[in-house]
Length: 89
Image (cartoon, rainbow, N blue to C red):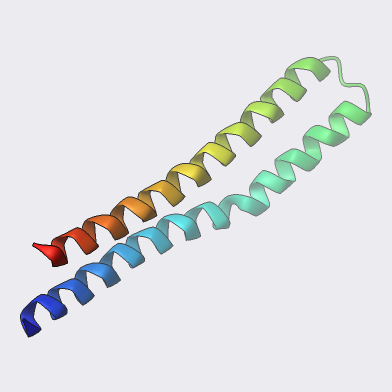
């Protein structure tokens, strides 16, 4: 019984570390994302000839980042569920 508890605790900690690392990686890129967004807004405000393409790319970038964050949250949930299901067996 004690062995199962130790195994569960170790697996849970490992899953948490993996999720935190992924979340940290996303957070680490947020300043770059903000800089790109600011530059895009500046270019749009200055009536850059490719304003429509810039707006489209910026919209895609935002959607991709949102999707990545959703996938990260989903992965965290799945890892947590997997660890918990292992303790039941």
